Image (cartoon, rainbow, N blue to C red):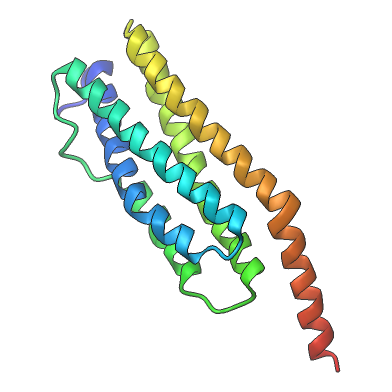
Length: 174
């Protein structure tokens, strides 16, 4: 597809998001399984359900546009998921690994926030108010997930990681 109009770029970016969300749909159960914190597992399970809704919204948009959602691979998400998978394969203290999983998950959320914000802006500029509203709903959920991850990191996971690290350090100094 030649990107010679904002409409074509909009559709291309929506396809990229569709690919990204479908990749995430497969990765989130692995992230939930790899997390040791019950609260973190729960956050991933809830985001999995939201992700299913994000895919449904995108499919609705493609139906309204009379376009196929398929045909593009989101290499950005592919790389972020590969990077996150590396932390799942590491050995270490559970809370430290959970802190690493949160970092990987927040990278994904920030990528999605940037992408949804951009396509929402395109929809607004193209006069696609209903599409912009649907995209804003997803953007709001992605931002909410990022905030949940922030709260988990700050209040539970990172303090536990510090505590485990101090205990491990004290044990190695004997």
